[in-house]
Image 1 (spheres, rainbow, N blue to C red):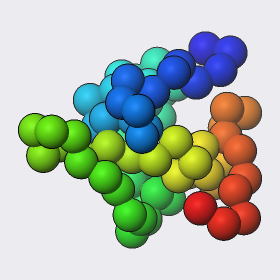
Image 2: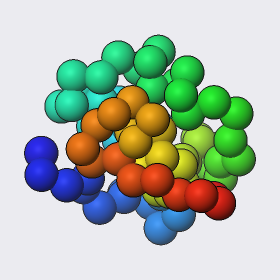
Image 3: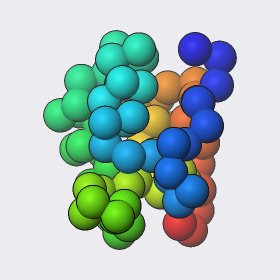
Length: 74
């Protein structure tokens, strides 16, 4: 994967898409969740969590992944 896929939701990445991305990047979900920390998320119409793109990029950055990107304020 050369870049993150386009988020499936207008505000970011639904949890099921995050799981697929982490599988492709060989990143354990528990490791991602640890660096993701406590962040604000939004919800889709079904009440499922949607992670903001900037928070996903920052978590990947903290994990040292090349697809990560530092965001000083998110």
